[in-house]
Length: 127
View 1 (cartoon, rainbow, N blue to C red):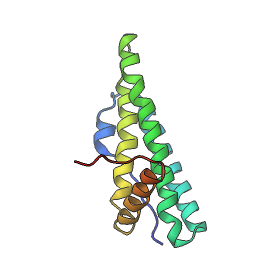
View 2: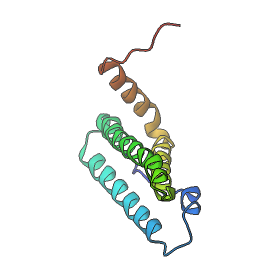
View 3: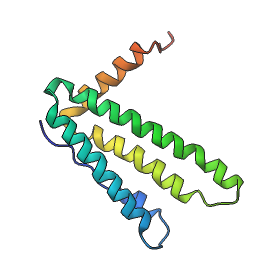
View 4: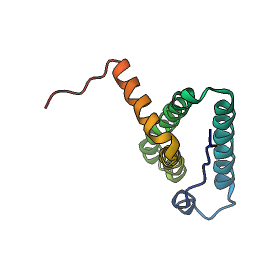
């Protein structure tokens, strides 16, 4: 099974203020950790379990993105800049997109995520 490769999206890094570069370093470490955990889990898994493992990671990233998204109005209400919350939210959303860019995984990941929607009882209405 091929390895997952993730990178820091240039747009996210460029959105950060030109300070010490601490946020960029933190993001790089976070991405390295996510990539490492995913690849370790995939190495130990059967090939047919890959989509489940990555779908779990996508759900965690969606949760993180949602949490950061909720910080934005709160920070603004307190007169604080939400730039870091926005950058982290966008980072997690970009990483999800990068996972779908892996051709060997994209179709299975879509199927797994759709299966989870149906399994959880969420149904689309008839049009």
